[in-house]
Length: 433
Image (tube, rainbow, N blue to C red; front, side, top):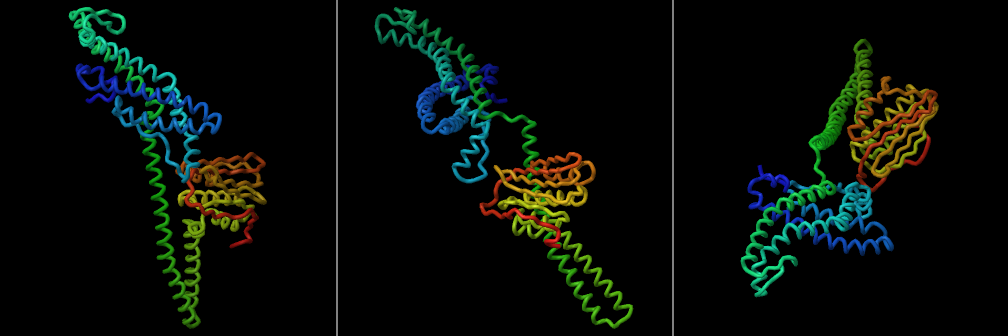
């Protein structure tokens, strides 16, 4: 198997004849030169940025250096070094800078930049000087003696006055060049491991599996919402239209039928068709109400509050959100209001919904008796599972005697800049049937 790092290459018998000593030398030499430049830049940034504009220039320099170092890491680490930063969910430089400032990867890159500028680059150059500079100086002893003509000092310490001594020094240099290639590569491997740990940590196998589970779960949520829309469309455009036609036909037949048993049976069939049509419309509304699809979560929650049996004070201000988030938020609000009406004994409730820092937060509070128990069959367990699919959380605070607060938090990006909101108001069951 091909060696991927200097540490793996050290165990190979052909290590001195392979490319890894040169890779290690190039990595450390370029690191020393880059670190010297970064040290000078940090001296300037450390004065001007803190006095004039604060920390952002230092953060940006750490981000830039992190990108360079991840590319330079390929000299001694053949495994890819992926960018650990997340793409911004909102446009604009301020959103990008806010996201980067909140990421751990940004601060790890800044820490690495400070290490490189203060400690690592002198160590890199010292390792290159000892492992390559000393042997090369000894190898050049015959050339130095020929240039001087009489004598020369090798590495400023050893006086050479004859060619046999010069060639002996060159032989010693060749042996040292091979011998010191091993510690040089080991040091380069340690430097690369430190750089990867701070700039591009390898994901464990379990983390890879978790990432795949999260991605597949997101695909399942999208597929579920698409299937929900298809079922709603088929019921609305297919079965509902046929039932409407059936009800009209039965109604016309009832009018044309003479009084008697046949007319009575037609009247019963007509009434039954009307009840089935009503139940089908309620079923379609429960799958995905039209107001949610047309106007968004804010208006859909207002509609649910108007239909609540308990008066609801509504405070909702939301933009359009992804469909899966809107569906989960809507059904969470509906289930919470239904529990208030059925189980709490409350005289009033309050529903609040906001989008803050990329998270939908929905609170339903009532003045009822409290003691809500998710294990009591109130639908809260299924609601929590539905929200967890979107990486959301559901928390309930319900002491005995009340009040009860149900809070739903779902992370989500904003789908569009236009907001659909409702002002604070009180909705009651008398508002809409």
